[in-house]
Length: 286
Ligand SMILES: C[S@@+](CC[C@H](N)C(=O)[O-])C[C@H]1O[C@@H](n2cnc3c(N)ncnc32)[C@H](O)[C@@H]1O
Image: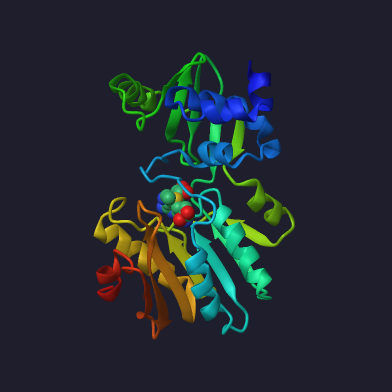
């Protein structure tokens, strides 16, 4: 059945829509990920996961064509662009952004990052998947029953709570990198460097000329104080005159975002796209 599933993309596409079965197949076919090129399967398996701080890994192809165009206008004026795409999930948008800039003859040092790019798996009657912080993300029993606090059956939520309390295994059977194959190829070719970056804690000083922070500093994910902490941390990582792009894609796929420049250590507003970022007041009063 597993062999059949991993070779039959149509079957996988259907299965990936059934929450209680999804994770079983995610893990069972994970060894074959590099061969899978069906976008619905990749999207479902790489990004339909909530990580331990309750943020979603959701991302999609072709999410930022409008923002890429405007970003290019700022980046083309920079002498040696050093770009950081923050919290990229599978990184499909980073790969697209890189290709877009390349098509415009921009040579840059391009970094992509995420705190939760990897999951660690312990196989067994109950197979469990943990984040890099060793927090339980999801699990499944035998072959059918997925346990995940984001599948809203009371029983799955309760079991997730119980399993979370069980001791974390000392060793894992394997690690799974949740990166899109397009990004992995660019990493292998040294076109993009992947870094582990926690928006709240990782300290990088004075390095980047352009930083993109999309769909992570959302008021629905973090309180205002935390968002301010992250913004200050990100600001430190930017050079003087560097540009920040921050915002959120709404449920209609519209990007509400803002561009800011770091000037004398402060963020100066440059431009809003659509309604601008939902955290514009926080940025103003940072
Ligand atoms: C909704 S996705 C955004 C993906 C991409 N930027 C986009 O807009 O399509 C949010 C990402 O933030 C990552 N994340 C959550 N907490 C983080 C943290 N403290 N530091 C860095 N990344 C984090 C998650 O792992 C997830 O991949």
